[in-house]
Structures are given as structure tokens and as C-alpha cells.
Image (tube, rainbow, N blue to C red):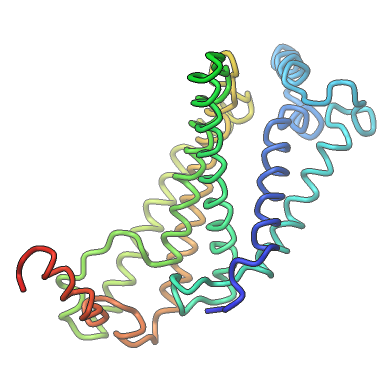
Length: 282
């Protein structure tokens, strides 16, 4: 664990990453038209009309005569740059899992991004409540935007939970068997995760990326965010990342002792006594 966790750069980099990723995502139709133009003329026209209707900077000419303008490309370039900076500067807080490895920096940074997405979601909801009940002027975008962000929070937090080993696990049988059998259980559980991830991607890839993403399916409301076109592909991406993180956890925890891994032997006795007192057992 690091004592300087929570420094200014750990706030700044995830915020900049969210802004760049959000900008690039909102202007994805421009990148599809420039890099992967549809073979169908009608789909090309549909994406072009969608791009011109949603473009935040419609007066800025596209780079090299394309649809994506310099701001769009700058956002795309900054995403991996900010990701690398965020991974190098992230620090493990005192309440987080102690035995993390360099490979866990990605999940830790995604965890910081998720935390700030929750903060932004809360601010948007408060803003909407203020406008609705104080000025009686509700927005057309707050509800869909919070729904969009909440979808990302739900998915991204899964990777962070896997890295922190805080997902739901049942230790009733696991803690009473020898360590070699625990290794067998660990291998079986990771194998099932990879089995699920493989068939999830195999069975859904074409439908999601061709039908939803490539056609850039929108939500169909006044604000009309691309929730189907973004959330569904992100489901597959996060399933794969969680499977990779599960394998990384298996390797990292292979030689840890019972105390280091946590579990029943790691229960805080003072906390246990406090729980007993609260329910009248002591």
C-alpha cells in the first residue's frame, strides 16, 4: 500500500480520461465513416446524418477531408496516453487489497475512473432535481445520461471487484480443505470463468458489433444517447477483461498464505465482538 494515495494527479488523470473517452464515444460515427465506411450507401447516409446531428463542433472541418475533426482525433490519441499515465501514477489506498501486482494497475485505474463516474452521476442527478423542483425546468438529457453512466459503472466495477477479490465467494468448503485442493478449486473456478467468457463472445460478437455497434444504434429518446451501441459491446469487453484478471489473480495468489489471502482466519476479533454486542449476543 502507498501513503500518497489520493494525490491530485489521481483525480486529474481519471477525469481527463473520462472526458476524452466520452468525447470520442459521442463522435464514434465520424470514426466509423472515416475508418470503416459501410458498404451500404443508405447506412453511410444514415451515419452521416447522425454525425451531423450529434456533432458538438459542427463548424470545425474534418481532418484530411474526413468526418472526424482535430478535436475528435486529439481525444482518441489522449485516451491511451492518459491510460498509461493513470496506470503509472495510481496508488493503492489503505482499504484496498495489499498484495497487488504491476499487472493490476489497469484494474486499479479503472476503479478510479469508476469512482469518479459515480461522483459525476450523483452531480447530474442533483442538478436535475434542482432544475426540476426549484426552477420547474427539467432537462431532456439528465435521465438518459445517468442511465448511460450507471451502465458503465456497473460494468467497470466488475473488473475492479475481481482485482480486489471482493466479489461474492463462499468459503464454507474452501477453507477446510488442504491447500493443494484449494488450488484445484481455484483452477476450476477460473476455467469456468474463461468457459463462460469464450461462449459469451462467440455467441454474441456478430449480433452486438454488427447490429448494435456498427450501425450505431441509439436510445430513441429526445436526448437519444447511443446506449445500445456502447453498453452492449462493453459487456463483451468487460467479460474478457474480467476473465484475464481472474487468471492474473490465480497466478498472483498461488503462493500466498491463508492470512495473506484473507477468509475466515482473517476475521477481525474486535469487529466480531462488536457485531455480537450489536445483536445482543454478549
